[in-house]
Length: 428
Image 1 (cartoon, helix red, strand yellow):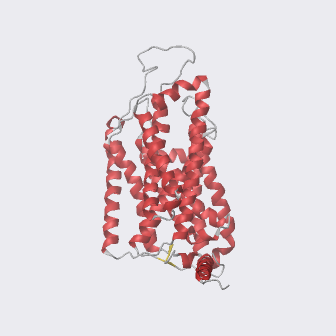
Image 2 (cartoon, helix red, strand yellow; image 1 turned 180 degrees about the vertical axis):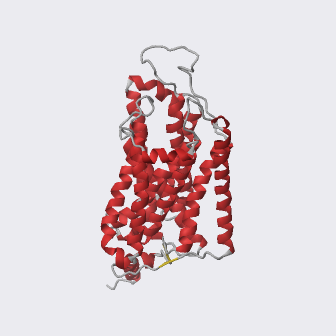
Image 3 (tube, one colour; image 1 turned 90 degrees about the vertical axis):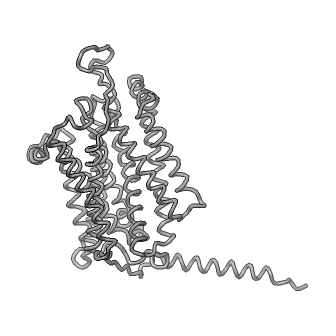
């Protein structure tokens, strides 16, 4: 992008009937989520599909998905600010907003799924630093503050310009630490054979890029379409290619995780259970996560014929989100369903469900609570974009990268001149 290009930001129209209809729909889902949380808190744990064997259910799937997606959504801003890729600079504000909103939605589900949300006060005042959960309290709240300061440094150009670079670098490093901490929750759990792995941290970092990019692209394309803001092919093509790259990286870490476990004799039973057990987890892995959530999006994103194609990007983003939810479901719930090895090398038989596969069926209140977190994320984005200037009035090619457009025009003129010259008959 030319250094002389001026980016003009503007709020979306917060007074139109369409805006209020959207806000009403989001509010309805948020109310259903809060009502579901109250229902589960009032009636007790038995109204959910969770048990003493599977203590993290669908709400945790949504919470973890949104929390690590927050880190990935901020990646667009990091590319512009830390790595100085100026083409992405017009998207930095929106990137920070989507990250902040995703974190808010994920933490809302996480807190309300505690059963006793008031017990959060204990978690915030009493710390056991040998527990990764204590570290995450600081990582989550810290990212809130850092992103808020980062956004202020972008939007308050006179006062915040001198803090912009340092805020961008801090946000970049902090979000990597946050995703590492979230992955380490599972990587440090030695009791669960499906978890306990050092690859969990880099896997969650790669997953965050995929989830965050998919959510960001859907919000960006939808907002530009609904507000009649031009969205050029250059931005779409670059983001599309970036989405394909991070999806390939995530697929690599998934292969590394499962091939490593299959190589180790003590991990083979849990791998056979998850991948070839003929259960819901193997179906979600092969059909939803790999086929629908990885292979098909890669075809849509990396095909030269579909470069910059809005429909292909939207479909790929939706499939990546569906595949991502399936991936988190398999990791969290499938890992708990496999029986604990209380005495490795020995067979255990008792009346306490020893050696038995955990059974879990999600209930409607759990799903509604998870959807409530998604509604919270969308609500924050919609309200903030109507109140403050987060999105440029145009992301057309000529406004985003005029130098590139001029080069394309010059190349086309040269090609036309060469074609005309070839048509002129040669004199003998």
